[in-house]
Length: 495
View 1 (spheres, rainbow, N blue to C red):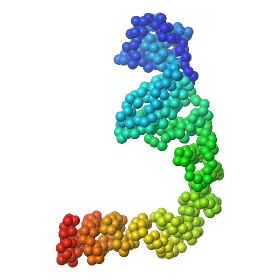
View 2: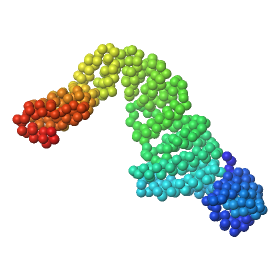
View 3: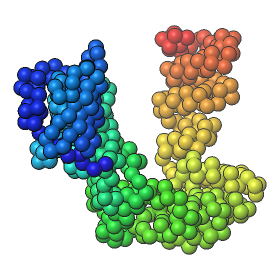
């Protein structure tokens, strides 16, 4: 849409209708809808009764037609209201004044529940004026929209009120919609807008702000997105080349990772071929996950042999690369190599993930027991009893953890917590273990409070699985009723 240039000024309206009629027309200020085009104004005016108005002319001359019935030469109050509204909405704004108001809104860098209301009010006033001017002068107001979006996207938000945050999100949505509409009314230069959007997304602070810039990105056309992708590639190339073991400054590392993520999102949105995607990932020699990303791209295309070759040759092995390679070994029937790799991963960093991978890989070659033996030999060699017990819990080897806790004489708090975990995960199978634990606490430790805690957990387990706790507990108390201190501990525990 080209900017609309009106053929008259307010002085022409006063000269045509008279100052008295112009003053009367002010009554309709809130009851006028208007459409302005070259040489013509079409409007609807009125509150209870609507009047259709059409005004034409040229060079300051005004000719009005109104459904109120007055003759055209009289230029009625409804015609005046229509042309005054046209002057209001279609006259070009002062770009410097608009930008000054935008900068005033953007000068606030932090918003909280205490100061957001005046900021939001000022922002809405600016946006309303931008919206009005955008209809007829989109190219003129687009820089102000862009500056406002940039400012608000760098304004951090700190408060707990959902109502306040919703208000600020409304501000952000209005800015996104307004800039998108201005670009639709008169398309911006694709290269300039695409590069600007890339710079904005890369520069965003890692804090909560009132605006979601990605929603504006979704409105861009293909040419603008192409320029956006080119700019991201430029920004990535401008970063210094570093070695894999270089301890990069945090701000630079965050910028590198953000550009990498945005480039990946953009590249995937272009639906590249497998080879194009592999070439894209191969570009970034600073990405520690480069080989894994390439492997996943090749794997999704069924090119497993290439994936295996690449990961086997990777030096150093990327984070998670051994797990990907082990799964590929299993998928291609190389179970012994898969099990060996999982075992290496477990010995390097024991975790439930690597332990489960080890057992799954060992199953097809009937080596599960051997795998467990090797794993537990390593766990036992850790030395720290607490570390051993909680690692066994992580591996879901609860029975082994339970035995190790008693054998190592760990504290009552540790044993009680293990009892709760056993009850949660093992259900009915935990009943004999907890009952035996309560007796062990009495017979071997004389720890009556611990015995009471274990029996409370056992009672809760019986209730959860629908079993009767009373007969077993009666038998238990009959065995120990001569121990008065134990009986007092049970009563204190509510048993």
